Image (cartoon, rainbow, N blue to C red):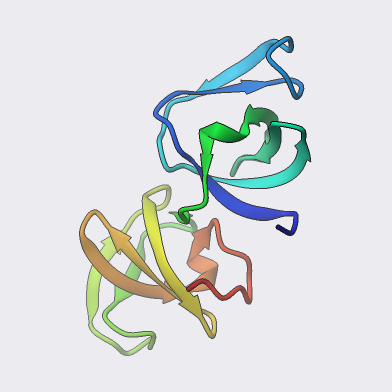
Length: 135
């Protein structure tokens, strides 16, 4: 698969190491399942990831999953029932809220916010590339 690409953490506790292997020290521990991260490198069974803050580390590939999640960015965002700025607002999501990405097309993403679906412009989310299509 191409690099870079977005994936998410597949466990509640993920050790972030300074290098690609168990012999490297743990720099920190992620404790947020489904947190979106950008996969930027691969070495044998380890993957180099970058988080929203730009910090990079290595994690074992078994700790990652392909399910797409994103974080809301830029303050409170109005998500709508259709990909249209005039559509009815279904939910207000604050910056930092983790959402499940259902699909993205033509500059809009449909996401799930704790059971409520809504559409927002792709720029509302960290975890999806500008212009990316997710199906």
